[in-house]
Image 1 (cartoon, one colour):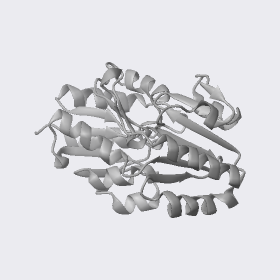
Image 2 (cartoon, helix red, strand yellow; image 1 turned 180 degrees about the horizontal axis):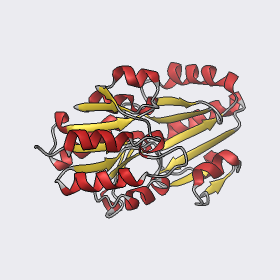
Image 3 (cartoon, rainbow, N blue to C red; image 1 turned 90 degrees about the vertical axis):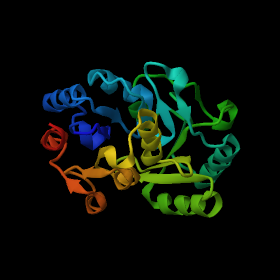
Image 4 (cartoon, one colour; image 1 turned 60 degrees about the horizontal axis):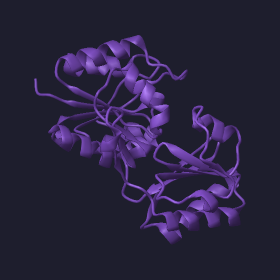
Length: 265
């Protein structure tokens, strides 16, 4: 059997609803790696909230973080590959946020972040790491950032996204996180988990058809389309299920372990 590159999303895929990795998932991933296959994490999370899962699974390859905006190597971070937004564009977007009177703005720069104000939204995403700055983003942001998270009320989501599309469509891409926080995530245009995964595939010498990717949400669409075998979890978004090559069990019911055992063991 030829070597495969297995990419796993975290939330809703490798993680249960309680944010745990099932023992069966760990066991099968270990067996898959012992057979010579490579396993990588592809997540929207920053390194600070994903590296402990990387360690728990005893992985050695870099991770795809921020939905492809950062390829992070926990072993040798000097090898990180970064696809940042332009700082001036972000500052313009921050001004738009003021016009819309949004609730909060969080700007990530690799594994650090700046936040407009401290609230439950920020604390959820901080993972115990304090911000580099709290207050007006323009007073702190001196670097090209990795991503921007905009929290606002549901009725402002579409008008704000329309503004981003109209003014910045060639410069940024954005996604909507629905309940309970109603957040727009902004990254560099053209960046996705698929672009990050392609970099890792090229690095390790895998062809596209050698890649098996697991996901459950909108931010997995490009990756599922690109992979040789795109797998939707049983709990996945209906659109993702339509695009996937196959559907496995849910994140609560050994979905990854069941399919990897079938395909690779």
